[in-house]
Length: 253
Image (cartoon, rainbow, N blue to C red):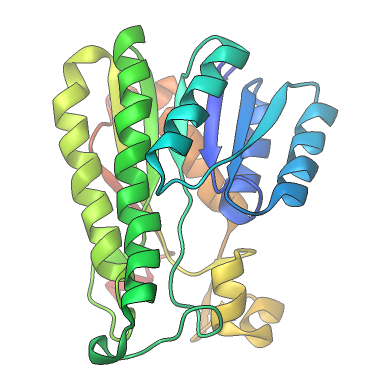
């Protein structure tokens, strides 16, 4: 389905990003795995992709740093000749371990900046430089990973919900600005998902072991990856600027 396409995946060394990268590789794509810190995990993901007979590289990149993001896009194009698909998936948020759940009056400036810069500023910078390349090609597809936390207020989540809500509006705005240039942009909003570091730390061992949270099944990284691939495929060629919630109906209860 994506034979010979070049796909950039931020946060591609683990969780949803890694599984989505592998699925793209299974469909014939060449991958650029982007990570800020996880070089060994990125190398392992690249090795798995190469074992599938596809080409892959990894790039160390802080998505909140414009010079890094510009270099990331340049590296993708220099290596593979184009940038056809971008999955802007890198993100951080409160998990009770690395970043605490606290009332807004107790959020530190450091934690606010870390979450807002990685999630919202990071998507802004990625869109800015990815779209410059795609506009020159007059083609491309971008998917942004937001969250159900960006659709409804959640107490004690600090900058996470506001940043995810901003990511949704930013991607919608970019979809309007580029819809006449052969470029599509959409947003996914996963709920709690098994196999992601944030969920594992947030919910602990029990829901990870039985796959349940509050009596409802948690999603899987492969289920999220399936939606991303569909949004980037020709089958979704008339889908643009939309938000797809992937939470098993949790938010309608």
